[in-house]
Length: 450
Image (cartoon, rainbow, N blue to C red; front, side, top):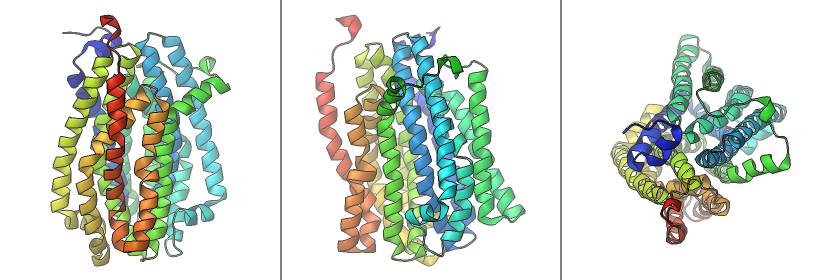
């Protein structure tokens, strides 16, 4: 059956095939994004352990930038998908323009503030004195790319929420692949060290931004970034921010948790910071599969909820949960068995590997509990359930993780740090259950069936 319009595709195509169709390019994008982050860790790890630790410190800065970008991107995208589901294209264009220019402005503000307060920022994010010179150099490059990174999050998410995940994939994967090649060129051929890694990331971000922007300029989308559609008022910007608040909470807490983790691990030396940084990047690579499939579900949930086709939202939720669990489970088992070898790829340091293996084992076990919480977060945000989405998004990296990290560090030492994230993931899983049950019990019948 052919679906002549975007609306028909989003509301009539079988949910399972639609989620795979939208989730596959998103998953590829997430994997490539994680891969080039891992490439930075790999190449920087060839310098020394302190340089390797610097990538973990700057990871907190990148989380801040992504938090702001995803707040505007997911906030606008959720609204846009529901507006398109209700066939209100004019309103969708207002939200796309407003979110894009707001994100671009925010990126410039973060860049300027970050460069002005670079040293205290790096120390706040967990840098030791030996790591600081490397972190400063790397962070300077990342901050110079802040406007592109933040506004790219908006373009990427608008494309996804419109059901144009393939175009989003082209922009992100192109930038990621270029980043990997530039890492090798700048660091190994030109010998630029950690500055080369940062420069490669900055250049690739602007290339990715240009490719994503071309999709809107070439009218591949239903929305655009026309200045006439920009609305600088509390109502429009406020709705985008409140809808995107779960993403800000999720990514912002990821930055705070990275800061707390680095400061806690720093007591045990640079090797501990480097080990936990490597483990987190490997886990994020696996975790990106669940995020990719979940992001394929987001436009399906938002579009069909806006169109009153609630049964498709429910069917999509459970398909995404089961499919994501199977994929993550396979990857987690493979990494669990070969944990030492994976860590060794990024840093040939016996102490780093020794610290990393137990942490990697714990996170592999907890990955079986992750898809359920991802599905809940994605669904509630996409359909506009702001309180549920915001509260659940604070659990994994904040409400559960940070207190656990501090308590386990005090009671168990380094072992507590190694298992804190895994424990937080399992607790988050169980907290999500009553929210899921309550929502589906109260879900109304499809409008067309009333």
